[in-house]
Image (tube, rainbow, N blue to C red; front, side, top):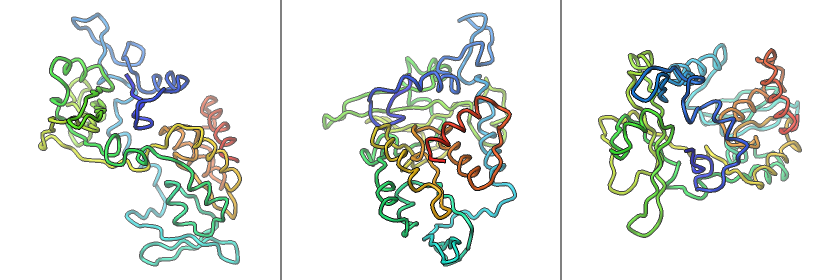
Length: 314
C-alpha cells in the first residue's frame, strides 16, 4: 500500500484522485500490461516489481536525464547564490558566495520558498508573505519520518515471513510500532530494486538485480548492514504538505510571477507534491522566458502543460 507519510510525513487521508495517476506510473501490483511476465508456480504470467518496464532503466536513465538537462549550458555546482538584485537598467545581478557577479535579463528560482526569500531581498512585502507561507513535512517532524533516508541492499530489515514476497512484489513495506516511550513510529521501506545503480548493475537482467531499499525511520532494535549501504539522503524541503493553505499560497504566486523578469518554479509552486508537476513547473518557466515546449506533439502532456501554466499564473 502507499502510505500517506510519503506525502505529508504523517498518516492522513490520501486524495483518491491521485491514486490512478500514481498507479499508471509506478504499478502497485505488477501485471502483464505493465511488467515483463514469466511462468512461475503462481501463474502462467507472473510478474515481479523488479520487472516493471516503467522503471527498468531508471538507475541509468536518471543520470541521462540530468546530462541532457544540463547539456550546452554553463553549469556551476556547489555554488551558493547569496543574493539577486535588480539594477536600474532592469537587469538582474546575481552574486554568489564567492562574490562573483553575473548580470542577466531574467532569473528563475528553482528552490524552496524560504530560500527565495533569503536571496531575493527586494521582492517586496507581498512576495515575502507568499514565500513565507508554504509548510513542509519537515516543519512538523524535523528529526524523523521522511527527513532522513538510507539507501541499501540489506533485505533483513523486512520481517522474514514477508521478506521474499515483499522484495519481489511490494513497492512499500510499512511497520507501525510503539516506541519504548509510548510514541508511535512509522517505518517505511521503499523497494527501488530496479533502480539499483552502479556499473555492472544497472545493465543486469531485471530478474537478477540485487535489492535496493530506501529506509526511513527504522524501528527500535533494527539495524542495517553498513557494508550494504549505498548512500544516505536528506529530504529537507522535499515535501510540501497537501493542504488548502499551501494551495492558496501557490495560487497567490500569480500576483508576483514574472514581475521584474523573475520567475518561480519548484514543488511548492504546484498544487501537488510530486516529481512530475515540479519538473513541469520548470518547463513552464522556461517556456515563459522563450524556450520551446519539448512535448508539443503529445496531446495529453500538452494538456497538463496548459493546466499548470494557468495555475502558476502565466
